[in-house]
Image (cartoon, rainbow, N blue to C red; front, side, top):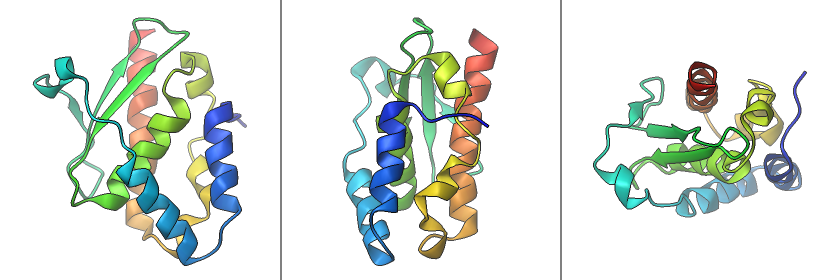
Length: 140
């Protein structure tokens, strides 16, 4: 069983502290907080995550394995996907590769979103984390 880096653990606790539709509102807040891509990635070929219902692309920068940088691109009209990407970005960006690899694949279940988000969308979040981990394993 893996553990959650501090920032991701805090996000999970935030979701645990609200109920029902408030969880959806919190997810929408995260969607609005997704960081824009750095200029050098705007034209770069990013990796698609086809398991997501909406177009989602990610880039994993492992130049420093002790401080991995995560970048996501998702359209504004896909707030659930953007919210999931933002949770991963805010929760894992800057963490070490080993800390990210230790995150349980199903950590998103602890967010309690299964009552407000479809299982298909939740699998999209799982796919995002799986692709980040795959990139890390390939590059470290």
